[in-house]
Image 1 (cartoon, rainbow, N blue to C red):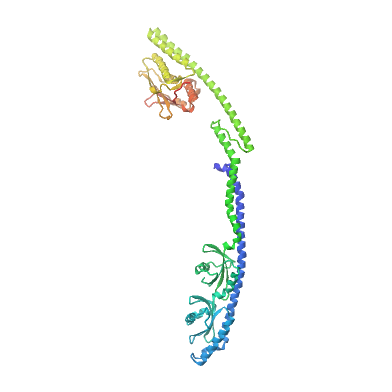
Image 2 (cartoon, rainbow, N blue to C red; image 1 turned 90 degrees about the horizontal axis):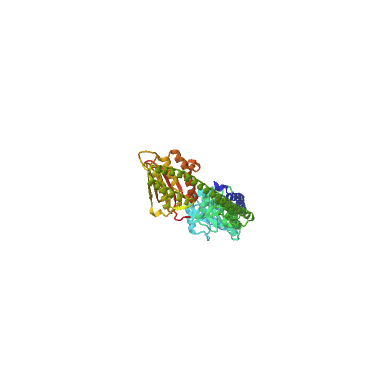
Length: 577
């Protein structure tokens, strides 16, 4: 959801809102122009087909009239059934009929053959064979005429008949004497006018002559029967044109039917040739979406460089400053407005850095002053308790113990006064806490004991001074109770296994009463920093934070067998400031 609120997304939406309607309008104009071209070409082809279909019907009608007149008005044809076959009268009449038909052939150039069939004698009389009509065709025609069912088919209209593997149009007329007159016409002869027009270049595709079953009778230029199969199912059905796929090419289909027969003329015009003048326009329209996409990307790149990149850089800078990286600076921009913003931003960050450094130094000085004050508070309190022990020892006559106690006190204060603001070695810090515990042990010789375990390899490590004493003192004050069991304080220092770069793990434990739940919760929230009762622990916490930051941790808890446990983890260092 965040990217929808970005400036880049909104600019893309605005550009798309303007570009998409324009592209859709161009696509619509392209389609409309192609439809107009299709309609105009279809009307032109429809006129051409109508002219040729009417011419073809006129020729067929002329032949129909001739056949009908010959069947009923030709004296020889009507008298064929009056004479016996083989008689002189029959032979003379037959010769007369043949001569007349051969003479009439000159008037009908499209007719390949005229014939007369007398059913009673099963005698077929035809005109003289021509170039396209062989004797074999006459023999096959005689077989067709012997069947009354076949003859009935050709009485109603011109129908297709296959003779000698060729397709012909045949028409019959029958008189009252059961004599048939008929004609054979080659489909190619009916297509000669169209062929002449196509040869002159007025056609751009193919013109096919089909019957009602979709059978191809003839085509200009020649086409295969396979190419015409789909056209039977693609009839225009009253529409001006239709479009189909012919051999994978989108093709315009225009048709015109014949009145005198079941034939129809079909014009096929491939759109690749039909719209060849619009190819360039089509290409431009098809490339427009890609051009728009490229333009959008180019615009986004420019906007990103001029507007978005400086804004993203500014946002990144704000996040860096928020995370505490005050050294981050914005790069200079080529745009005047963003250059002004960049300059002011960098100047503002510099001022914030200087201010933060000043505040930090002031806080550091205050913290050091507080630490010194706390240490001064610790010294008088501990001194009074120690002198009180010395007084009682002298009073009881324990001079050697008193001398020993005074030596411990001297060592203790010598260390404290020397390390008020110093970093010390771990070995010195351990010696100091041992001195402190010896003093406390002399106060409670029967009830207090301690154990200190330190890895020898870590004795040269450095750490803040007086780091252990506040926790040991807190254990003695709150965990120690006068009882039969000795109160034991254990201190261990070892390498921290959880810090791969090296660290110290300091553990201070006792077998006393442990921490209460409220205390543990207070320690977990670091609320002891402002607690007057735990000034020493707060002092250690502040010093750890000042020296190590987030790398130091301070944990409080209780041991399972009883007693308190404090764990400090600090980085391992081997130098002293």
